[in-house]
Amino acid sequence: MDARTGSGTGLNFWAAQRSVNAPAPININDSTGKDVGAKDQNATSLSAVSFPLGVFLVGQFLLFCGVGALIPALPLYGKYIGLGDTVTGVVISAPAVAMLLLNYSAGRSSDTYGRKPNIVGGMLGIAAADAVTAMATSLPVIIVARFALGAGRAYAEAGERAFLTDLTARVPGNRGRIVGAYQAVVAVGFVVGPKIGGVLVENYGPASPFGAVALASGIAAVGYAWLIPETLGNADLPSSASMSRGSSAGSWTKLLRQPSQRAIAAAALANGIGRVAKVVAVPLFATDVLGASPDELGTLFSLWSLGGLVAVGSSGLVVDRLKNVSSDPADAARIVICLSQLGSAAGFFLAVQTHSLQSFAFATGLWSIGFGAAAPALETFTQSRAPPSATAEALALPKSIGDLVFIIGPASLGFANTLVPGGGMLVSAFVSVAASVAFWINSGGGTMGGSSTSVVSSSSSSSSDPSET
Image 1 (cartoon, one colour):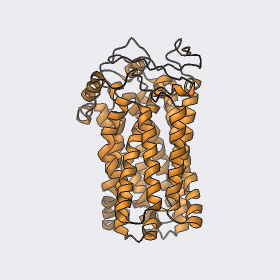
Image 2 (cartoon, rainbow, N blue to C red):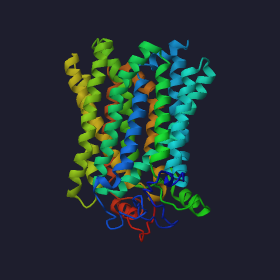
Image 3 (cartoon, rainbow, N blue to C red):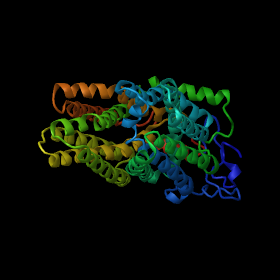
């Protein structure tokens, strides 16, 4: 089987026909090899990408069900193998450290060698790392396995984000819906996964969910290797020309010189601090100030997940509806991002003032809706501003910011909580407001070398010569 085109499946979805200097259209072919998309390169029908998108989403659902299954296991896993709380924290944070170190190189790999090798190789790495974790009995082996997990996730996620961006470039009219569907699948996985994990932990011990993740990742890797196409579009494996093209546009330092990329970084900072607050500051306030029991806290987590799930699904639809009011489709995402992040900040400001679990649930519910709605809008905006020749590298930038926040955020918000009850939520709210202002100020321009519409057209016209990607 051709690893880059997936021709071994007999499906031949994409013809890799992009030259070094000018990206060719992503063409979806039928089994006869006839180009069925050539007549309408700007097709907006989801049917144009339905099969590869469906396979991708099924694999992601399996993966995130497995990841969600780890939620009830992580607090118990350290005790199960005899680790202290501090060492357990190191074990939990090790993947984030590895991802932060490797996100950039993973993005370059995806832009140079293709999306599919990154996705399949990364998934296999995840499967192997979690299988070792499930069987490990010594600390050095566990730490190495968790770093390996972070490496696998860095490469898999770089390929996945770029693959999704390539699909949305094929049907730009449905960009918001596709991103919303992806975020919804992830959210559903996190709703279903913990229930599975709880059953596994109760019946087979705290290490068993790691085996579940290994199994889910392995199944997804096999499915992706067999069924999804390569969407990068370069006909050849890396040449010196393609390598130099990636290196000339791929530097995050160069990316951050662009206002739109600084805007993305600011929004990613707000999302990252909100994610940390969810697992650190919010539970601390609920239990220490309001006296919430573990069962009540679990109910709150379920409510937040459901609120976020509804928001994720609605956000993509709103972005697609609003984009008709502006010549720049990304303007709709800008509006949703700012309103969502301001709404989530308002939820935290209100939550600190509450004196009962009912009012706290309402306030944090407002936060969860804002937090959930911002994620697909930010992904849509990031995709629209990603340089075509360094798509995966650009998409890895906000991910790395989130990883960095996850490494330093827990201690920072925990310290804020020791100073003032609810201090962690207040810090998160202030950061969200400041980031929203910075995002709005910096996000008005187009991509480097052109507007967002030029990026889309460069992906759908073989005659275009984009000035950057």
